[in-house]
Amino acid sequence: MRKAQRKVNKGGKRVLPASSQLAQRDENPRIPPSLTDQLCVGFCLRFLTTVNWPGSITVTWQNLLDAWFVAGTATTAYQLFDFVKIKKVTVRAMGTANAVSTLPIMPSASVGVEFPGLVGGQFGSGKQRQAVGVGYDEPAFVSVKPDSLSQAAQFQPSTANAAFIVRATDGQRVAVEGAVIDVQVVYKNSGDVSPAAVGTARAGLTSGNLYFGGIDGLATANTVAKSAFIPIA
Image (cartoon, rainbow, N blue to C red; front, top):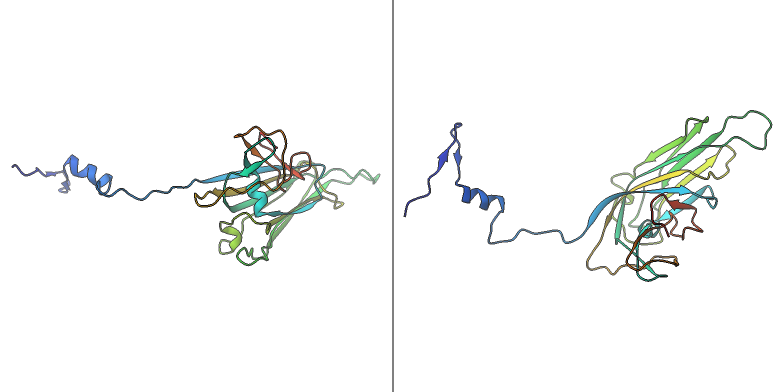
């Protein structure tokens, strides 16, 4: 049999026949390559503070996993993912004029984020940032990433332990309604972990549909910061 001819390009480099190039591209055709059998997706959750906003709340890992869920029945729901990792938390808030004083006081707002993580396996390094905005056209703005070497920046399962603390108040330390909270996360599931039930009961769900929940895991009517996405429940 004739040996396969080997071509040489202009640069003097040897070019393998098309059949050999195909085998290289697919690695060893007799041994299938390893594959990742789980879903891992980056996502930015957006929440808007409501009239129930107390000015400051502690968000847990369970809250973040409860923020995107699938309905099992009309009243039961399950977390869509099993693990979550925080990339960044951003808060924007605008103050309102002081209605009590008769003086023309400019409105101001104060926002802040902290990664306390006092629980073993979820230490957050205590990183904390605060910012103030003054005026009608300049919102208070703060954006904080967890320290890369802290466990607050690692994948965590659904627990009631603190992930971060977020604050939004006006110049009189009154809770600000309508503050925008963005939480950039990475979600991941596992075939060996049974889906956890959402912590707060819901009503009127359509089985199999996906829904967004509040930042505190509560239903839309009671949450302190509802999702900006639809459908919400």
